[in-house]
Length: 309
Ligand SMILES: Nc1ncnc2c1ncn2[C@@H]1O[C@H](COP(=O)(O)OP(=O)(O)OP(=O)(O)O)[C@@H](O)[C@H]1O
Ligand SMILES: N[C@@H](CCO)C(=O)O
Image (cartoon, rainbow, N blue to C red; front, side, top):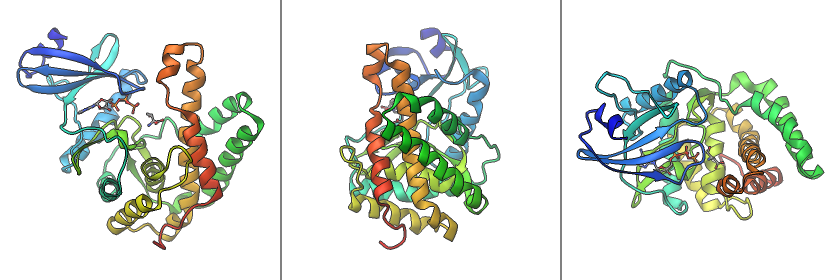
């Protein structure tokens, strides 16, 4: 670690500490004589896949967002290899992960999400999601036999319903560069102020309404029931719409996007859960798939309108 830090213009290493929060990458807080930083080792991507994500973040940083762009070492490299993994160092932002969302934080997120979507539309690179349509079609077929019949039916039925919808309306829905995983635990707040958005490693070129739905499902749902907290929902949705008005097809797509966004995280959690089931230590670190099963079931029962708030 001392040798790595010495390759950057960050002064000398004082201390470092592993971060236990994440599930996808390996992260460390670094304290040096010039400040605090975060080292990320990418566990899911090979070296050549990482530059896209670094370019997304630097594009958004240039547009004024508080996002963690990779720092350059003394050779002018921002992507390194550490312990055989691609690795970067970024600034450590002030603020904390909230224990839960509030109506006010939802309002802030709605506004900033619409601004992020607008800022991402002129990003020149396009990358399909590695957890997009192809992935959920094949993974749902692979996971379904492991589920109770009722759950398997829900999963396969929803994938098929979305296929039918998107075949007809895809070209009418705005696409752009989106975060893809903007859960509240990927934001830092200092009091009521949003101080940073982190973890852009699910960024991709996709439907803006899909990204909007990912955010609403996580920020506005009661995780124990899956139901929406309507005060949070109105705050987030109204703030978004105030900044970026969805077109008629996007408004019609809203229930489909909320359902498929819930399914995507139900499925990724199921996949991770099944992958870890023989290793109790890894299993204990996994997010609970049931939370997103309940959110999907709640969205199948009812989706509030996007516009009549
Ligand atoms: N630039 C940063 N500034 C401050 N804290 C950070 C920064 N990057 C990461 N962290 C801290 O590290 C934690 C894990 O980071 P991150 O969410 O990127 O990991 P991850 O493995 O991708 O997590 P997950 O997959 O669960 O979303 C964050 O919750 C946050 O506490
Ligand atoms: N936000 C994801 C984990 C990281 O991709 C989840 O909660 O399932």
